[in-house]
Length: 112
View 1 (tube, helix red, strand yellow):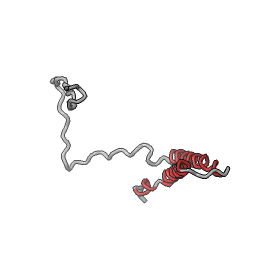
View 2: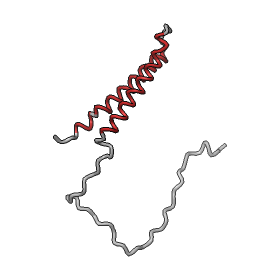
View 3: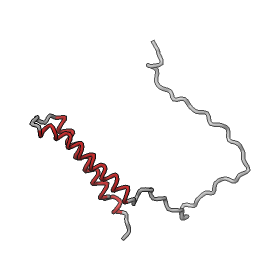
View 4: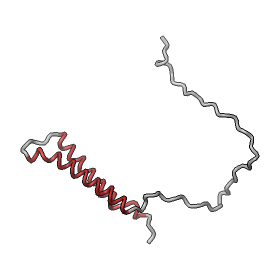
């Protein structure tokens, strides 16, 4: 009556290799008040061309999705829930592209 499927899951513990004693000195301990190097900024933080390319691509993709959903309506077919959902999805993709182009978060951290 007891199968592997009905038994509680027990994770397999990995066995760590033994530490090899080396003659190298241990890593230095940084004092709590000591200055450290600043964290590196993301690589594409201020890349205007990347934002233009991805933002305009998303606006174009959202416009295409909206246009494909709208085409049967112009032929006289009534919109169904799927068509309306596709139109909302296309508009949201286009809005995401506008947000990437405008970069509201990046502007909050720029110094004058």
